[in-house]
Image (cartoon, rainbow, N blue to C red; front, side, top):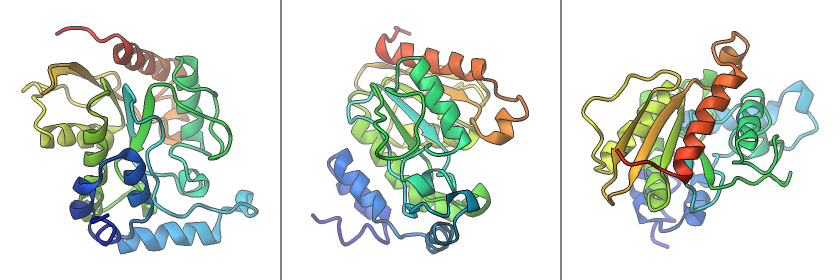
Length: 253
């Protein structure tokens, strides 16, 4: 596999050569391209949180989770230090994941209403979850260079999913921007006038394959938003419901 020698240091060269999500996930897991993020994710995994001292932390990049023929793609920001960086599955093992999987389950998009570990039996229905940054960043703030280095993984994941995906659900401003940037890079014909990010902001576009797709935004289900009431369960449920319905039915422009 010609990309194997590149993936540890140069995702921009490795990602376009990868032909399946299975191989993409393998490549992402092996990536060591950002020294600061590598150091931090491993430090968190070694020191641990007191509540998880008996846990074996994952401490590596986080892949997408869900089927290769997903109709709905959910995009988040980055792994949680003691969530995905501990459990090895995106949005798993922390409060943000509790909110997201509960809503996905309520709307028929997840087998279980919780996601606690990689072997808990959870599976997603026509849905895949990914994140813009694959390693936990200090303070949840990746640098501009780190975001740029990591971006080819997301771009390739979009490319591999485009034959089936109908809805993109972006959780938070950074995920919204990453989604729009990626679709632009893939030469999708997005409308000139797009709404600014906000909870429930959305627009439709006709893809290069002729299919109608929906992009919809939601406030991220972080504790900062859920504890303050900026995002309520009913607000999240409403957006997930809309995203799921469009993914399965679709509507013409």
